[in-house]
Image 1 (cartoon, rainbow, N blue to C red):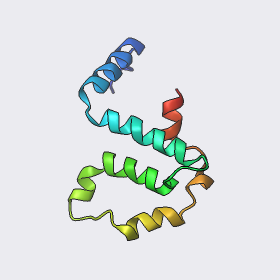
Image 2 (image 1 turned 90 degrees about the vertical axis):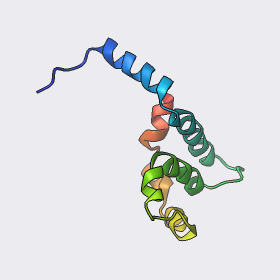
Image 3 (image 1 turned 90 degrees about the horizontal axis):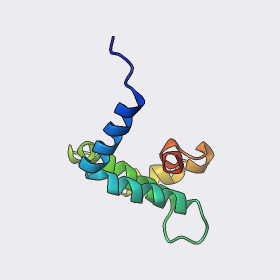
Length: 95
């Protein structure tokens, strides 16, 4: 069993992650898009905003012969994402 990391260790790990993980920028922008998509009058849907997160964080999944095509996006459009409430992805940005 591994010992529980100290708070200072976690803070340092997070700082290093942000400095060295290039997808962090995409994650910030994608979570912003999700938040905005929940407002009225934006030129994109919540499903489209969520697809940005999925394609950013699951890039390798979609590169291995799986396509993020119109049928795949339609599955997200028909699933009521608002019904799920605010996702942990959006909540992270509030922390």
